[in-house]
Amino acid sequence: MMTQRENLFRAVRFEQPERIPMVFVFNGACYNHYPLAALDDLRESHPYLFPGFRRSTGTPPVQKPPSKQSSIDAWGVTLESPEEGIAPVATRHPLADWKAFDGYVPPPLPDLSDEEKKQTNLAAKNRRDAVANGVVVQGGLGHGHTFLRLCDLRGYEALIYDMADNEPRLWKLIELVEAWNAALIRCALCRGVEWMGYPEDLGMQIGPMLSPEHLRTYIKPSYQRLMKPARDAGCIIHMHSDGDIRDLVDDLVDSGVQVVNLQDLVNGIDWIRQRFKGKVCIDLDIDRQNVTRFGSPADVDRMIRDEIATLGSREGGLMMIYGMYPGIPLENARALMDAMEKYSTYWT
Image (cartoon, rainbow, N blue to C red):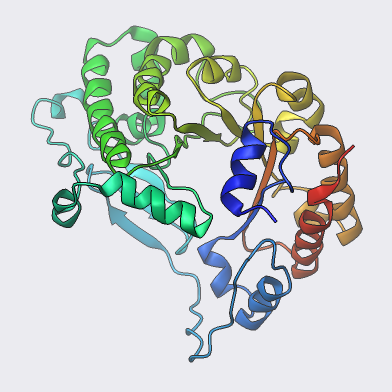
């Protein structure tokens, strides 16, 4: 039986993996909306999705009612969320007025810890440990590292106007954000990372958040510079984006992306097949808006089977991931887990 590491690399490289790599993630808010024992039951009964899972024998954590969360991040952005676990949105932008830019101080550049700096063979050690445990050394940028960071700093509407007006100060802001991201990439490479993630939502429900022209002018060059060191080091380049990104994907792949994580129903399974199957590894983000929320367990099973029949291949090139949020019926979550395990070797 292949290790998780070998199976994953084989899937990405079209080298006949043993199974389709499958990932199921519980959003943190789930723990305050579902009985904890029920979530443990789901994990315990699905060993492929949750290898080595063991129930906690201690006192279960106290479930808390949802409460609004508010914070200010290291960039000075005010973030608010309806409850813990749900991604926050920026409600106050430190550079909403360009007058604030001259005195703006970004967070310190990322660096290795003092303990890591003492290790002369840090990368080699991490690689050896990963091979021994059958896993991959993963790293990358935080979610929303470039375009969304600019949105948080300036505000979405202001940023789009900046791009349309070719605002000269925008270029300096991009340089500032890119320098921070580049330092994070350097640290990850020093740690021996083999899989580098570049997660950034660029799509809306219909269409992208910015035009292809603005992506090519302002964002793509930064992507290319940030991906090049990792690509040159032999890393797998993975990019996640929620939303409809059909107008942007050619530029994303051209930037160096080897694994594209995109939403299934928003972009369309047939379109994904035509654009990517057999060419670029698909990390399919499974629907959270329609079938898994409002369908029956049979509908959920059918959707997974059909997606794999359409996109899967004995050669590889397909992965799948599902993020569960509050509101998904537990019986649908179980049906989804069952289907992910059952069809992980369903080759057409």
